Structures are given as structure tokens and as C-alpha cells.
Amino acid sequence: MRTPRASVLLLAALALAACDERQGSDKVAGPSFAPPVDPQACAPNSLNSQITAYFPGSTSGPIKTIKDSMIALPAGNARISKGIRILQEIGRLSRTQTVDTVAGSNLAQGIIKCIYNVKTFTPTFPSDPIYNFAPALSANKGGAFYTRGNGTGDTTSVHGAVNIFSTANIISGVRPASGDWTAALTGAPAGQVLMYGYRVSGYPFNTDPFVYEWATIPPAMQFNGGAVVALCDDVNPGDAMVHESNIGVLAYQAAADICDPDGGYSLVIKETGWGPRALAARLAHVMVDAMQPQVLQAATLGKSGTGGTVTTFKSKFQRKEVEKVSLSFAQAPPANMKVNQLYPVKVFVSADVNDPSNGINGVCVYLTGATNNGTNTGLTGTPSPAACDNTATGGLSAITQTVLVGNPAQPKAGYATFSVGVTKTGQLIFTASSIDAEGNTGIIERSGQTFFPATARTNVKP
Image 1 (cartoon, rainbow, N blue to C red):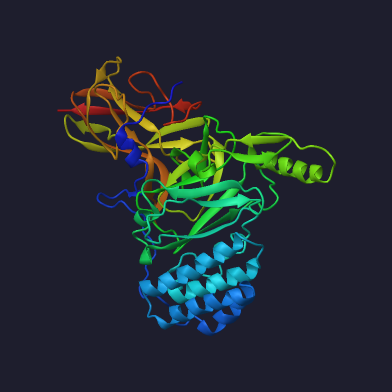
Image 2 (cartoon, rainbow, N blue to C red; image 1 turned 30 degrees about the horizontal axis):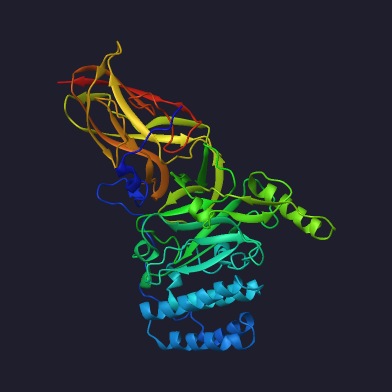
């Protein structure tokens, strides 16, 4: 099989915000931020002791000064910017030395209470485990705690890495899908966010592939134009994709620039192989051999990365091999259609990852029509949001994406939507497949999957 090519329009489409099923709505609803601060939650008198508990010695003085400036400001963007600056310093310290992660989490929670209306946060702040920042502040063990959106046009990825105090090894990261962080965070209060993450599987590695959780403050912040989430390894098989909990399988995006920003990293090793389990074995060899009078074997590994495009996250991410892909009609053509009249048709594409209900983004869906004797019948209409290359004459194509489904509406991957008409009367069989006009089949930029098409019957009347 050969992976189908995507049109130029696809590159933009993969980074679009999750679109609502309703016409005209294209964003997942985020939290409200009015009023900006809950005065009962903010406890400025406790912040000094929290600062002293985290920042050692005289380094706490400048942080207290920033805190005083923050508290003196009225609720709003200026106050948020001061608080974000303190959160930035909390993260920076965690990446330069071993810190008291519990003290850092307490301080971060205290600052957040004083710059946002945490009553609007979902889930409940700070009792939900997602707001325990201690794992994210364990920077040497894969934690990530960064602020972004400082208005300077910064494009630097945020990273979760291990062994950063010697030879850093990136295990996950995030960057804007296009442009810089300022453009990606235009919807954030003050245009700034806290981005943090950690390995769910703990330290040392005990699962392969590993699970990494990313979140933001404010929660579930929208990324204008999308963001790329990468899971980093030295192997990138053709069927590897990123599965996001609660959403599905993300549209594939190459992510070597996140995982290996310098084009290669050096690590003293005794063996190679994919996955955190192999990395743990390599690091174990380093530790053992460092105590033995022998020369270590050195190697330079080039990291690729399995990446996926997202519009928002408060989710766990895991690398999965996508081998079986099934198509079904979530909204089939009506049993009776009128010639040259348009009807909504929706195809759901699922990946056999964890369970068959997991949709998969970034798949080209080709819709064709034929009579009972196999004669093709031309279809008219439009896809949403973009079509694939090599669409057969008389057929339609669309790229699967995330939409809002259910009540209450939740984002879910794997939907290709069409507005479809038929040019001739008679019995008609619709086929939804991933086969283009040249016989190529596959997920965009991926290969190695087996596809199972879907059919639906209709009767077209004058």
C-alpha cells in the first residue's frame, strides 16, 4: 500500500480547531473567566511562606517583590502576567536543580488562585489530581512546567525530559502547529498559559510504550491553529500514531524537530531499541559501567517522534500502532433521495486501539456511488473541511477530523462530513472507503493499515 497524498489545503485542515456538528460553530467551548478572580480563594498572606519554602535563601526575595506587584494590581491581564512570571520562575528553578516539588505545587496553586477565577475551572480546582503540579516539577524525571505566550514571537517547544542535569533525553513535547506561541494563544487571558506535563507511568519507566499527560492553566486552553504533541523515540514505524484519551487517534504529524531539536543527541549506551523500556536498560548500563574500570560504548541516536495535531488538551497521550481501520456511516444517506438534491452524510472512521469506538483523524475518506450492476453514478456536493488528492471522477472525498458529539457535546475524533447529491435516478449503493483513484489506500503520511469499507443503499427518485 502507498499512503495517499494530501492537498495543500489539508495541511491547514489538520490544524483547525475541533468543529461542532452544528453549522457555523468550530470551537470547543472553554471555561469562562469572568469575574477574573475569586477573592475568597486568593490568600495573599500565605504566599510569602510558600515562596520561601520553594525558593532557597536570597532567591526568594525577587519573587516576593513580583508577588507584591501582582497583589497590588486589580484583577485582569496585568495581574495575570505578573502571576505567570512567578509560575515561569517556578518551572525554571525545577529545570536547574532538585526542588521541593510539593512546596512548588502549593505555591503554584496559591498563585493561580490569585490570578484566575478558579471557580470556573473544570475539573474542580485544586482538589482534582490534575492540579497536583509536583510530578510536573520533577523535571529530571520527565516532568514539564513551562509558561508560554510572552508576546515575543517565541516558537520554542515545551519539553518533558529525563536525566536533564547531565544528558537530557526528551520523551515528549509540544509546539504550535504553525506560527508562534503568541499567535497560538490569542484566546488565553493576557495571551499567556501555563503548560505542564508528566509521565503517568512513573519513574523509572515501567510501561512500553509510555503514557504522558499534558494539561494547561487555564484548563483546556484553545490553541489557535492547533498544536503538535510529540511522543519521542528513536524509531518511527509507519503505523505509529498518537492516541489521546477521551478524543481518539490524532492526525499524524512528523515531530523530529520537537524530539531532537539539535538534529541528534549523544548518549553513552550499551544497546539500542525503541521505547522507554529500552532507554531504562541503557541508563542502567551507564550507571553500572560508570563504576567499573572499562571503556563505555558511545553512540549517537537520531530521534524521530510520533506526533499528532490537537486543538486543546487535558489528556493522556500514548503511542499506538494503528493496524486495523474500519469505516461506518454515522449518518447514512436517506433511504429515498431526490436527484440533484443535497443531503448530509457523515462517515465515522475508527481505529482498533483500546476499543473500536476510538475515531482516527487524518484519514482520507472517498465516497462513491454505483448501481446494482456496478456502473458508477456521479456524486455532487462538498466535503468538510477539506478534500484529498486523487479523488475519483464523480466521487467525493473528505479528511477525518474532530467534531463535537453527544449530549453534553464532547470532542471526538474520526468524522468525515459531506453534503451529497446524486445525478441519476434509480437504486444506488454508496461506498465509503480509503481508496483513491489510483488505488492508493492508507492514512495520510502513514502506512501498513488494513481498511474495512462501509456501504449503504438508497433509492434516487426524480
